[in-house]
Image 1: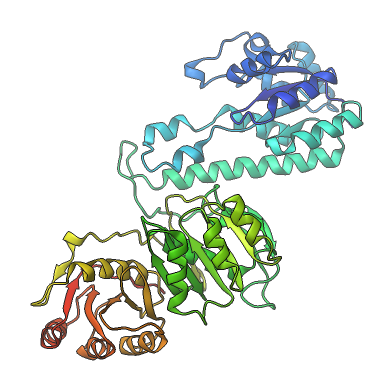
Image 2: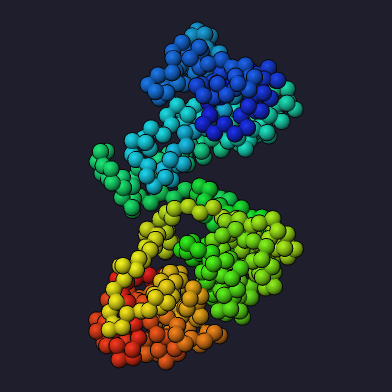
Length: 515
């Protein structure tokens, strides 16, 4: 095992660095470093030599040039068992570097910002860092490369146990991680810059890149996929969304849990006020938006308490004690929320198997779906309707109460599988018709599922009514107002039927198919 005597440290993420550097110093490993990293180490009481002292050149070009110098790259790349290499180091008075600790500029963090400009992205492309990482990884037999703070404690412990040496297996493992890190970094840059126009001066971002480049490290294996005979794993990008949720309690998450958790999280994210969504097989069996989270949950449950058994539930507020007390009366598979109050955790964790996950919301990215032989990508359906954009098409306009219910129904039906019909009233779903081959069947099923009265309800439809029959069926069930995109060749017939029946209808001009 090669002895580690000299280390180069240059990092952007300084988590745990001072403690790691102190551990190296205690093993008499000398440290050279750059800029802000060197300042941090000195402030932490760690002896450090600036790279500029080693190279004889100052950091240049606003920090673009720091470590790219033969004195540094030669010290890393020299094969210790090659006499010619070692003679070259001696001739040029280059001291070998045995350990490289580098992580890269946070390009992906900057790229995740919707307002990130091209020039800012370019300035966050690391050059020297990947060079150092790849150099060390290429010479892994002689040089150890550490790219993640998560490895600091294990590396320090092994060095301490082996008098400043790391095993060949550790060298190889760290090199594999290093190549994966630079590959992921380059792919992130390529994928991001591909969204900009064809000319370097372009300031407009193309929503669909010329090449779909997906790189998502595996978070963990799942017990199985949609069914026990299928294998599955969770892959994630970044730190936001359901794929990066923090599980606080319960059994391991399943493939179906995650799909349903994502469905409920997307739905409750539509609402500004406290909201709850109860999901079965990606469709809401109930949803409500009220003044309190507990009341939202109670009204969502009242829509279809039978289907709610074994459901997945989403909230857009921290789950409080009162809400947790209500949930505890029902068998629930999983709950997604921004957080859980300590009192709520105390109640819910009394149920051994319920899965509790904390989700950090973020801007939606591309929606990618696999088909045989390839992938399809689309932008997220992030359209939000404003009342001014809806057009009243009937002689009777909706009442203020109907308007509020129509807006609520429109948000919910966007998250119901097509053909989607949602009966609603006063911030509460009353009946949901999902995934039917004909719209009139969705209308009938939505009404048949209703336990609560449908008198004075409103109906949201994700796409146009192709014929008057769906509207007529809903009116017979008690509906008095409708919201739909419009666009059918039979729109005039549907509007005429609405006028004949004395109900209000508004067109949005926006369709919300969900396949």
